[in-house]
Length: 250
Ligand code: 6PG
Image 1 (tube, rainbow, N blue to C red):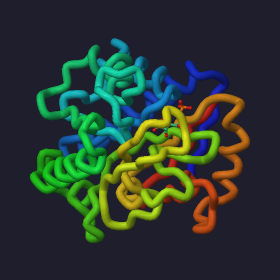
Image 2: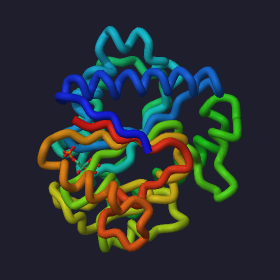
Image 3: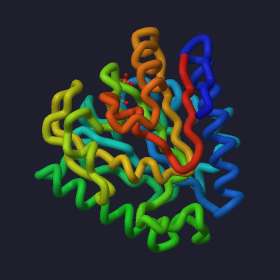
Image 4: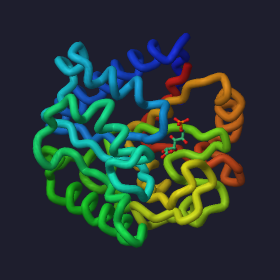
């Protein structure tokens, strides 16, 4: 586990953006593509604005980058609560990602279980068909059958949830599916969600928790103290990626 602390949200955004650029460039040099899972909520907004700013646009290999979502609220994509909508407004609309590189999680699908199934099919097709550059051990589905994303960005709720994995919800215990529906999230907005599952997240080459605010300090410490404890009450403590685990915080 690697921890980086920054004095304010601006410095956090720049530090995280620099890591994303470096990691993306390395992935592209390794296998010709970079698979980047975006997180929702408010914390990532300064990072997304920084990544789409001219200085970072020049060095970020957006042409070879595929973006995905770690979770989505079951609302239309232009709804104020949409994680896609937030990423579009803060970043994607300023970029010209090639067609087929924005893998939106269809949160508006009814029922949510249908949206989860559709996303799982899209992910499996993407990783099976070599669209992510030259197939290589790091990008082909692993022996456990899960894809390995290059970078999964995650936020942290005050209750220790991450993505839309909430304590006590069946989604947190899912061991085979890649994406599932969450009918009763324990955090606002209290709308059904679709989330990537823990085993898929843990297959990643790198997971970055991006967290800011004094009000998250206690839960960060609780999660770190419970790291790897299967009895933990904090879902984020069960994020134990095969690759690197980073905490970028301010
Ligand atoms: C979501 C996110 C969720 C978020 C945390 C932190 O869809 O809400 O995936 O896991 O990252 O709740 O949210 P803030 O960044 O708004 O504090």
